[in-house]
Image (cartoon, rainbow, N blue to C red; front, side, top):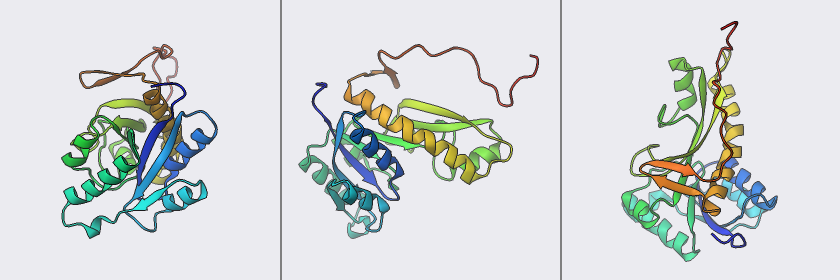
Length: 223
C-alpha cells in the first residue's frame, strides 16, 4: 500500500470499545497509517458509539434483532462498509459470529482479536478457562477471521504470565494491556503490505529477529 494512502477501516463493535480506542489513539498519534471510515454496532447503547462521537467518526447502529436471518443482517453491514469504501474490517469486541456471506465479501480482510493464545481457549470466558486449566502463560492473538470461531490464521500474539493469585479479572486486565498494543500493530503491518500468506501461516516480512531463549513461569532456580 502507498505509504501516503491511509488504509480505510471499518470497525465492528458491540461493547465498550477499548480496542477501538487504542486504534483511534494510535491513528491520532501518527503511528498507524489508517482512518476509521465507519463503525458499526449492533448495540444502540454500546460505549463504542460514544467514543466515535467524541472523535468525529461516522457510526451506524444496525440491530441484529431487526433482521429475519443472520445473513440478512450481514448483508446490511456489507452494504454500509462498501458504501464507505472499507478496505479492512476490524472486529473490536463484536459479539456476533460472521456468516459465510460476510466472509466472502471481505476475504482475508477481516481481523479479530482474542484474549488467549489461540488455538488454546477459543470462545468465551477464556481467562477463567486458562486459570481453571492451570496454564502458566496466557495472552492474546490477532488473527484473520474465517468460518470457524477463533480459528483463522494468526498474525501476532502477546504472552503474559498467569500468576498464582490471579482471578479472571486480574488476568483479563493484564491481557487487555497487550491487546491495546498488538491490535494497532497488526493493522499497521497490513497497511504496509507486510503480511504474506504461506498456507495458513501469516509471515510478517522485515521484522527484527526474535530472541530464541525460553521464558519460564515460575522462573528456574539453578537449572
